Length: 297
Image 1 (cartoon, rainbow, N blue to C red):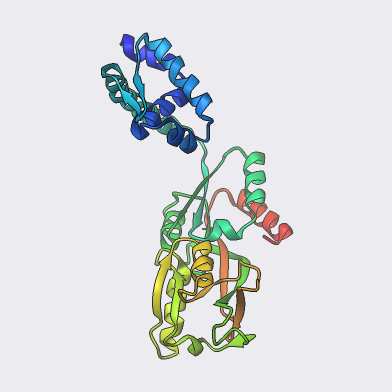
Image 2 (image 1 turned 90 degrees about the vertical axis):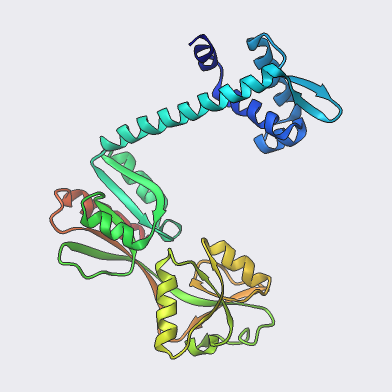
């Protein structure tokens, strides 16, 4: 107990500093990872040693070598930081349960919506809890249906008599091509023009993946997918390096290296706000939707 209470007097950030030096065995490398100066990190280690009353490292030309005390301190500090993290997570979860109206986000929607509007609305309505973690589209639909969350930002419209949905934003789905590609000079292409082309898409967790694949199948071909990524910036980088051409919502500006080409057929990425028809928080939902309508997302 004395050791535990002694550790609790220490700054948990200092424990992280110690653990990083222990694992890297190099002050410069550890300082870089922690975004600290080597001098500042050295002072943190010295402060811990003074508080422990023992040397935690032997400084050598090869780096920081942990002493026997340092090894014990490392093992115990990992337990303490793990317990602290679990404690704070539990407290956060209890606090979250007190917020009765929860908002969920499908993969890709946070990038597209006006986050400042959601944040402002949360600040004005403290009973709201927005978990800034994106989930699969279907998961958000199910959580709204099961009353686990009160409002969801999703991609596409699902027909369900228990749900109400409002289209909040529509973004064109375009073809990103690199300079020198055979389609670079085109302003508009048919979807069938990407047949046999190496294609880069958002992965299966995103609604757009299934939309694009289904659209290609309806046009009589299977897309040749060479990369499935978890965020739009990766599509941009892969196209830029000529790994393939990308199909994605129009998030990026045209440059001398990459441009967006319109796909004929009015393919769009539609963001909807969904909620249960029988929600007791209809007034809150309507105010939230109205704010997005004013801001135009």
